[in-house]
Each structure stands twice: as structure tokens, then as C-alpha cells.
Image: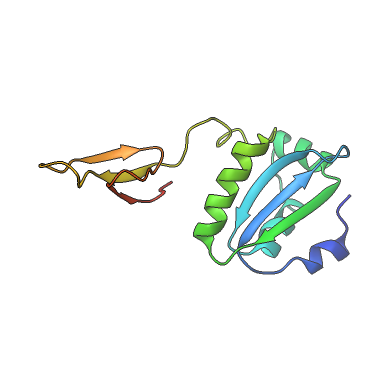
Length: 131
């Protein structure tokens, strides 16, 4: 169980948090502008989170976090960790889709603008990822 003392130690910085069950399996990965504020929200008694979140909270035995330099870095790290660990409670991002990029094909006589799921080293210009 995550203690109040542990919650106090979480920095108010951007990053990614990983919630683990009793077996040490990651059951949820989330990102936050302020790790401290976001993680504390899960454990507030006044919150009415719904049955699915209540079930997840009841299974949390340990919490890890990774501080990042920016929200964008946290977003990308969260996405990568969800794809890698496929946590049970991350249903929205658990599919195999990547965040989209905008691709401009510079190698063609008439450049095209495309939406793609992966940036490649192919001479095109990429912008993103976008949510």
C-alpha cells in the first residue's frame, strides 16, 4: 500500500508514474505536469472515481515515478511504457497505434503532407507526435 509519507516525497515536477500490484506488475502508467498533485488525486477520500478506478486503486501496492524535463517528454515516455508493459488499466493507449506525426515529403517534385504513425529517416520532414 502506498503510504502518506511516500506521497509527500513525490516531486511537483512533470513525469510519469507507474502503479504496481502485489506481484510487482505494472497495472497503470500515467503522466502528469505535477506528479505530486496527480498521484495524490487517486488517494483523496473525497473523490468519487468510479468502479474501474476504485478497483485499480485497491490493487496498488507500490508506486514508482520518473521525473522528466517537460510534459512532452512525459507524454512520449508514457506512450512508450504503455506499449511496452500493456498495463491492464490503460485501455485507451494500450492498442498498437502510435501518436500521429505530420510528414512532409521533401524528396518528391511535389511535396505531399501526410499523417503517419511513425517518423522515419527517409528525407521527409516530420512534426509531432500529436495527441
